[in-house]
Image (cartoon, rainbow, N blue to C red; front, side, top):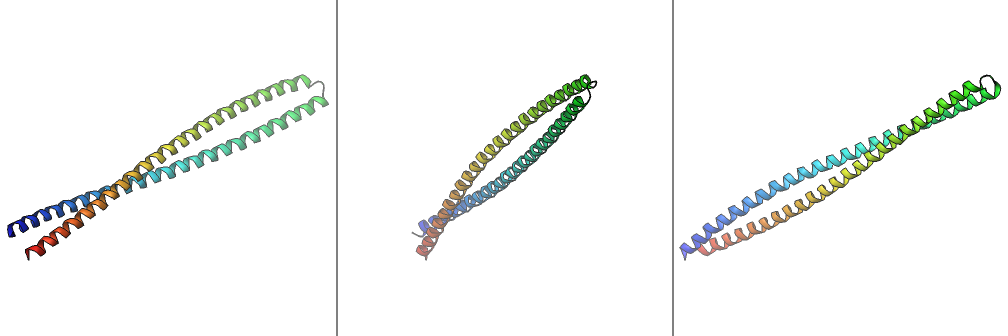
Length: 172
């Protein structure tokens, strides 16, 4: 009986050691996952900052386009007034108006290019945010699984300690 109790006690000690090792591994995995979550949160913050920068750039481009459009309108009005005042300058003013129209077309083309780039940048940022959210969800799931493993390891450790204590009491 004493040999059986000693063997049981030795087995329980091995079980306790294995449970403690499992708990250490689970704790290490938990820390790694927390670090990964923090890295993804930093990346999300970077994505938000990039999005804010793009939005700021878009606002600046829109303001510049509005200013250029206003300037082009004023320029056209001044040319029309000069055309009304002087018949001799009429042909010269028409050429200048055509030039202003070409500049407006060029500005409209630049605006279209800027708009396309902005939309593309926003789509890329949205895609990045979706990928980051997906990864973050995966990390959270893994974190939960590790936590469940930790809880199970703690239960096994508690059970092993209880059996060791019971065996020690039986030996006494």
